[in-house]
Image (tube, rainbow, N blue to C red; front, side, top):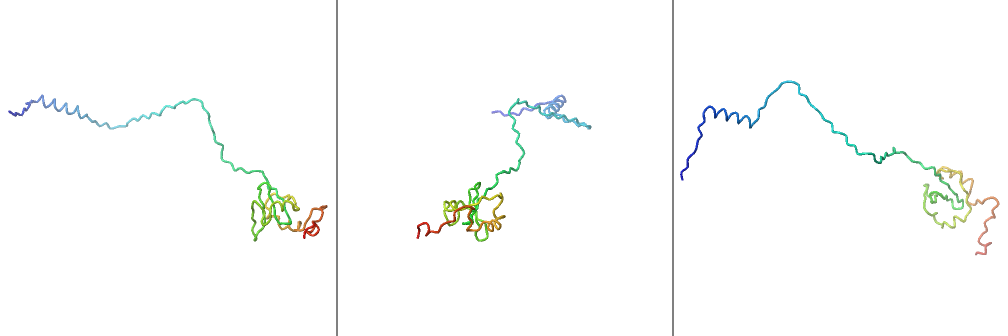
Length: 155
């Protein structure tokens, strides 16, 4: 085979044409000194149409006006809260609460003499005065005295 390199012979016109082509393909960067204007375009608002609007209310501390109501059982030194459905008693210097009274069934306590209290805060605040006013052997006025087991026919 006959390998020949073909070299184009170009004159001045070819060099000018090549330079113009090179500048056209690479672009021409010019420098202009002066203020530049910038245009900012805000996005157009999108109208969705009327719809349900929920506005959450501000957080508010809620307090309930439910007041505790206590019944005191002097024979057992126990309080019962009807709102809390709990018994309260003093044990070892601390107030204890539970669903049933300590050491005795609820039915026995409920059958014993009781006094509805007129305070609506903690029994601990009033307990010293309550114990003086209603001692363990307290009975409502006009109530028959409790009979001993021998009088009931017991042994």
